[in-house]
Image (cartoon, rainbow, N blue to C red; front, side):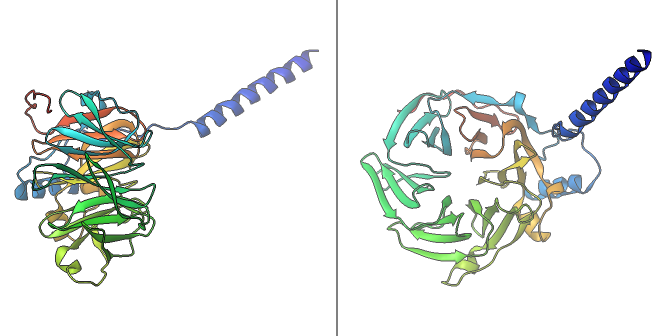
Length: 341
């Protein structure tokens, strides 16, 4: 009897040990937050170089989720987002509708129905002062011009169009995620391929000299660049590395401070980082250790929207969530603004 009791106790002890080991193997270790203490390493040296060529001060302490404020709009599943004249224009892929959200108050109104799913959009006014939205519809492979009168289809043979950037007065740059390329699209729907060999390209941005493209399909090729002069003719060109070692890079935005801001992932969290593109190009590319982390969120990656206003308010949101978050970059808080009509 005593032997049976000892055997039973040993069995229980072994079973508990197995359970403990199993739990240890299957538990998920949270992604550690980045250090907020400046250190003497290559990243710090890169920050000093960045400061020398940019108007912005280096970020020594990234903002976190607790620092973010929420614009409470009435959009259930926003995807692409763009700031324009203190309004946020976003496409809801739940009801195929474009909404206009006041960036200060959250007041929301329906703009128009008929865009199914767009990750980015370009907003401008025409010569008559009327609002025009230019949108690559990812779900339907269409390029659209949208105003209050309706949705006009300009092209219907794209291949997973994701990002859009104004190239010049008459043309746009568009990334095709499924075709791994960048095309130039005229305002009347004519296209030509200018960049090939990408890896699931998403966000795109441009300055006076260069074009920047995010590759969400390759961490090694996170963000790449090509000069405007290289794509000025009809030939197709390949890109060069700008930032390597990024996961799930999506939106890009060149802000008024001269930095290139981008959304990417650290583990399962959505993060916004930045680099000075001129410094990265001069050095033959930057690594992920040279990125300045701007916002370290608790939001699930990937971040689906990223836009920065001229007064350096950064807006972001995660996919399929109604909340739009924002942070004031720099030390000054934005003054209260009245709702635009």
